Length: 303
Ligand SMILES: [Zn+2]
Image (cartoon, rainbow, N blue to C red; front, side, top):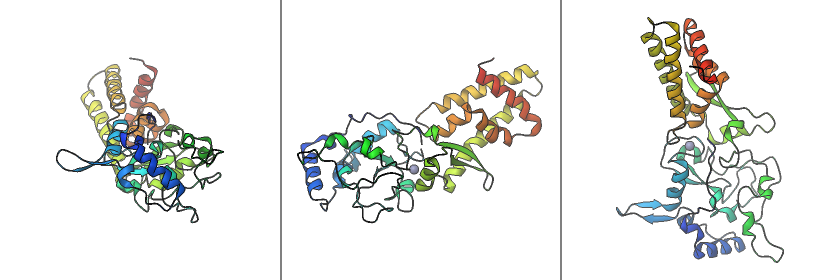
């Protein structure tokens, strides 16, 4: 998961239509009304007569075709951050039906993160659960309180991180998973344990994700080894220069937001502790000190 800046006013046309507003008004007054997936998906047929989603089209602009939770390239589904029809942790809850068509409540998620057994209808909180839509004093719907960063919704204190509100770097880090030589994601916030809970809700340590992160590391380690081998006969200053160039290339890759696992790539190349724990520990002892020195020099901007 990485932090995303999405313009909550830049809504797909379907969500601003009068007919959507009418459907929402009906839904709020009669919660048992069917929630229309044709609205929250913005279903349409393209030139090849294939069914497409204008909501996913718009989300893809901000998320670059990646899942909001696991950062894997996928054909995303429209995920309701606050579930629309029921809440697994609160059996008497009817779901946040009034947020079914709320742009800031819609995220792109891959099937594996979104399915039952993963996120599904889960939404555990540590605060006061909201059961009803917000109304004005005169009894009309208060649409101004639908956004996910509205005070009453934030007061629910959700465990699940929202990639447009909560900066994942404050909650998530990575460590070696020695069981399968992959890389596990782990929570680092102490008080709320929102990091670990998010990992558990979305199953972010499922095997294919750990292995995919591990492969990224294997490639970096392989390049470091090649670099050391090629420069073996050279003098030590040149070896360091070569390694620094290599780290610069990795840094470039980590800011290419169209790539998968950007949070992981960024932390590897910017956080000394993570670099040491994950990259250095995979190198032979005799190589570790020169690579560590080169990484420190790269961090300090020395050439
Ligand atoms: Zn996912």
